[in-house]
Image 1 (tube, each protein chain N blue to C red):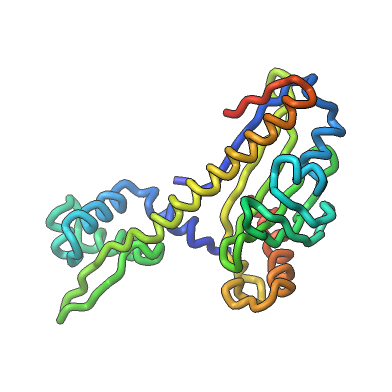
Image 2: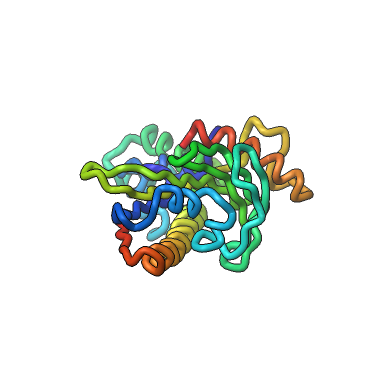
Amino acid sequence: MSDPLDDLFGALADPTRRALMVRLVSKGPATATVLSADFPLTRQAVVKHLQALEAAGMVTPERQGREVRFRADPEPLAAAVGWLLDAGASWDRRIDRLRGRVGSRAGSTTREH
Amino acid sequence: MAAPSIERTILLDDLAMSSDELWRLVATAEGWREWLVDEADIDVRDGAAGDVVDDGVRRAVRIGSVLHGEQISFVWSSDDTDLSHVTLRIQKTDDGRRALHITEVPIAACAQCPMRVEAVASRWDLRECLLCLAAHASSRV
């Protein structure tokens, strides 16, 4: 099955795509033509990267006349990071309880790494 | 970059507790209530469904598989859209000590499931969907 989070992190595995996201977040929406001037990439290569980011929900195309501008949408990434922080904190609390449980009966310790 | 997941490994001193006691903590509702969740109403066995209360939030749970003394896996949901697959595995480290390895991986609704989790109306339907997800997640994680 296709997992949206797999798609998201897969899209961001590429450093060029991360750089494109940073560019779109910091300087606002841009066309593939403008982006190709800012990066050592052909317009065709930029479009390919933008399509991957769009598939992961990270950018949204907006038609303006004859051109299409791409707007960054970092919300999916924020949601994924939020899940990691919340779930990680929950497991740390559970592990603390397990440590206390083991220590209270067996006088031993647990370690996490 | 890998998909997001939570991983924790807890090294347990060899004399901390018997294997039976450790397994009780990992694979019974009574054991879960001592560290994993606040409340647990489930018979932990292959395919079983139940509910737990975790940090005050009720979660539907579906057990995926139980390998006695070694590993359990389950899918749980804190609401109808927030699903994840959890594995608790007891393993030996290279130096012979026991460790509990924990993973939690968020999962999306199963494309092969006839119903989308977002559209599930009842908790029974959600449990049926969790069964499907648990089966597929076990082969995926």
